[in-house]
Image 1 (cartoon, rainbow, N blue to C red):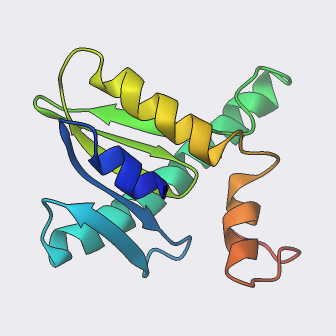
Image 2 (image 1 turned 60 degrees about the vertical axis):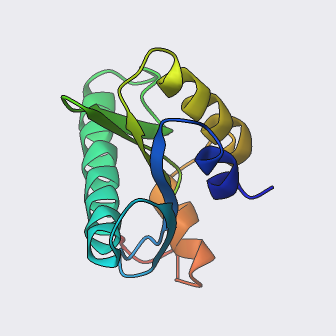
Length: 134
């Protein structure tokens, strides 16, 4: 079963989807308008770039800190949490144990991200991974 369908089967998951490294392509299921889903894919790409940059800076001060490679990120708001692993995202309600269930599925399906996440995502698009990505 595709990861998005599996996530959407969990009560409390508002929406789930996949976004491209470039941020211009996405697919999703759930209670989002197409415009909101487009903005969500841009948000996920921007946060992924930011988290990778920050972990690189921290790792430069403390090598082998365990921050690299980045596996994903989570942002918790007052009512909704957004989480991303690899190039998959989900919007979930803030309820006990829901985040654990969602992250268990995302980590099991996406697996450990090896090396540089951005290089892996860019290579899937057919990009030249030897060029500077940022």
